[in-house]
Length: 88
Image (cartoon, rainbow, N blue to C red):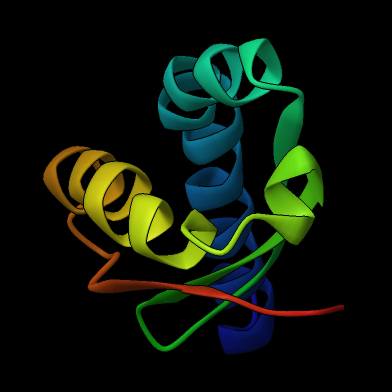
């Protein structure tokens, strides 16, 4: 493998761990309130998420993402140091 392939595999592993683990813990609560969240990208320790549904228009969404999603991700996935919400 080349360095690029190894970096891609590491990113893929991180994404799958996020999708199949941490995200599954958070999404039911968001969906219950009429919202949702989706993974956009991961760069240099930062996970970028996009809000959907009711979460997209909620003024408290950024704060909730910081308090809930970031806490779960940073505790379960050591590579994650921060979560940011973006309009993708």
